[in-house]
Image (cartoon, rainbow, N blue to C red):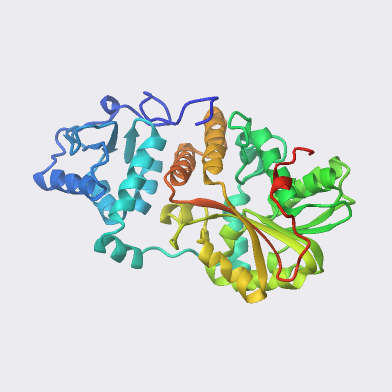
Amino acid sequence: MSSTGSRSSESTVNSEHGVAPRDVDVQPSRVVTGLDRLLAQKMLEMVGNPGISIQLWDGSEVITSREVSHKLIITDRRALWLLLFDAEYHFGEMYASRRVMVQGDLVSFLEKAYRGIDEAGKSWLSKLLLAISHRPRLNTLTGSRKNIHHHYNIGNPFYQLWLDQEAIQYTCAYFPDPAMSIEQAQVAKLHHIARKLQLKPGQTVVEAGCGWGGLARFFAKHYGVTVKAYNISSEQVAFARNKAKEQGLDDRVEYVEDDYRNITGEYDVFVSVGMLEHVGRQHYATLGNVVDRCLKDDGVGLIHSIGRNKPGLMNSWIEKRIFPGAYPPSLKEMMDIFEPNQLSVQDVENIRLHYAKTIEHWLDRFDQHEDEIRQMFDANFVRAWRLYLAGSIAAFTTGQLQLFQIMFTRDRHNDLSWSRAHLYNQGH
């Protein structure tokens, strides 16, 4: 967590974070059988007995480790069976509705679970479950609009409560100094990307997937470039256009409400930050063709994306409830964008721990505004999004997810730096 607060925990009584075990509605008449206890024990064994106990619906507890630091509270027999059948999906569903609860720090609970699941992933049963698991929704032209609407058009005021207040960046920040505020780290991220691209006044930039438009405005203001930014979220585009006008940048920044596949023109720079996760594995060749047709011969590009060390699907609950259509690629899969178009990868950086720290700041602010968010939506929404943010921290700290920045050029582009010194030039 950030230094401004502590991680989310469910041990606080009468809090939306959950309840302490003594406050669970224990019903002794609801008998726990020997089979129930055996199944709870097997569930813990399947994830390597990670220092977690299970409290069942009659108040009894199943413990398989000598060092227990967290408690999973299961409120009914059906919840236990659903967890055994598909914990990845049903844990999220039942956590949001309080059919399962966690006593102790939520992030470290999930870290323990992820490490255990990773070890269990080597078993034949896990491989079978992966083969039949939920597949992400398609990112066709129509499908992408529906998927983006599901996540980003739920209201700008919601995101403004817990993202940085400068550029409203919903992507990984960069912490050259871990003590930075989230605002400082997001500005540092934008400078870091600009230095990688070696932006020069007068250049033209195209951005695929611009969020609330902060990068485009920042590049235009601080680096003297003109930017054409594409996005299919109507709420984000409207916000971005208003901000550009307020800041007197609307003559240098154009926001286009359209899909990246419809980018037209030629540009000195191609940049995409946090969009590839929404593209879908089956559309990488299309994205590569877009880059190929819009990047000038001496152009430079950068793609910033959540990824994995090896191919794998997004958590099925997050894909269904939070990020429909999401798919974080491996580096090998990302090469399908570059190789067919003779694009040369010049620089790869993995800043996954920066994303863990970024989300720690987000979760802290989310918790600070819990009452307002509950009034906007409801208690289940609050718990679902808290789990999403806490789970994302755990995914990055345990290496389940990575954060790649890839800088690339045409294969014959020779105007390259002889060192990486420019990346750490603090002139801006």
